[in-house]
Length: 136
Image 1 (cartoon, helix red, strand yellow):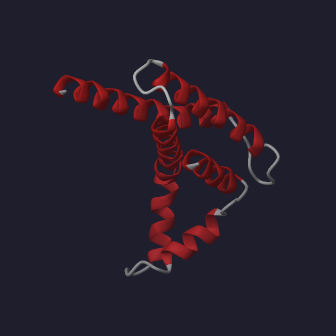
Image 2: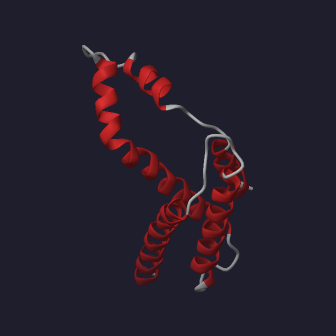
Image 3: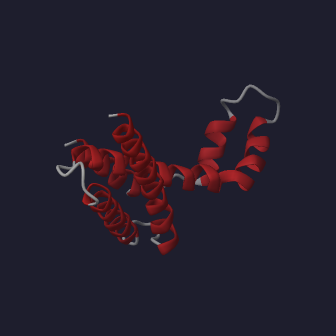
């Protein structure tokens, strides 16, 4: 159930667009520094990709972890490859879905970014499983 809820939240956020100007203005007004909106605009101009694309990777790392947790075959290679394949397929379908959302678009680069988050989560999960097996 949890993987489906998380995948639904990914889908829901893929249906929305947050414009740069309203976002910068909203954040800038909340910062307790002089000329905050202008300063945040300059910051966001250079580093937006780190936050936006980093969140993409994080979303899919979480999706991988939830699918892996729900996966029935815990001790096989499929316990990593199955959830990873599902995450990759979901990333591709989500990007395709975004081609139908006004002011959004889908691209292969974002599928790769999403999948990289799932791969990192798979690596961490694999190392944790190996460590656990070594201590048992």
